[in-house]
Length: 430
Image (cartoon, rainbow, N blue to C red):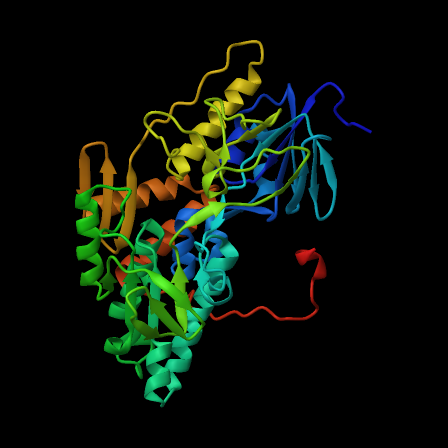
């Protein structure tokens, strides 16, 4: 039985920046909102690298959906945990591994996942940081390598354990490379006295001639300089061809023995099994949408955030896949759906700038024609990311962690916590 017969049902797939802003802003007097996510918490992707490098605990950058939906701003929303396996556009149904949910309007805001550019075996061997779970796994594996290397006497095995390759020179790659570089420069000698920091090799490879290609040339140059100061070996115009879990082979024939390759080189839209239509995703598994975020070729279906491809004169290849686009699209769609009697407002992206951090007192910021680097950019990066977190507790905990680490380079988070295997939770893979 329909609990809300006087309201239309809107189902939102994904509780990231786009999905949450839509759920928060839409008129709940008109719409009954069902938010679906495979996790029961919202995470803050720009800080995944800090979890992976033991800088922050996972709970500091995550917030339970059910707690967030208790807020008055979300009254009229409900949360369903599940991974969407199938969408039937003819019957207007969303199918998860647990249930079938009907909808009047559907909003796909599932974001992106890792793109291995056709090198399918990479998924079995590389470590990724596109989710909290992946960041925790990456942290555990890096700590495992350091612990094993500290007691290893075989020189070849020791070198393999202490070689860390990061693939991708975008913000995520630059940030994790900087964090591992700081680990090498400031922490190894203190916490792993049997390991010489010079033995640790941190290699960042990027397939294009510059780091941070989406930002300006000054930011690229500053990022390169900052990483080299942290003893990171940056190799531009270098492409990974294959990796079998032991040997990384590059397009120029170079081979490097390593147990740890961290992949940040690309993203693709989260895939779904779509029935009842011949419409398929566009390039990068993104859904082609009009200026109002309606999926072209699908009635009653919208896409917002990283998974939406809205091409226009300024952005012929679609908007950048960043948080601000997701937030603004979520809010614009909420306004349009909350005022069905009015002419909908086309989406127009307001670029508030880009930023990336390289390490302590090292960051780059581009806002229009304004470029900042060094300590001023780093403090700007801290403030923006701190205020973007959900929950005052999380902001306070992160601020204390950053303050403490700034002066001591100490962290109580370098804990190697492995999950147990049994009992196997079979429904996770159904």
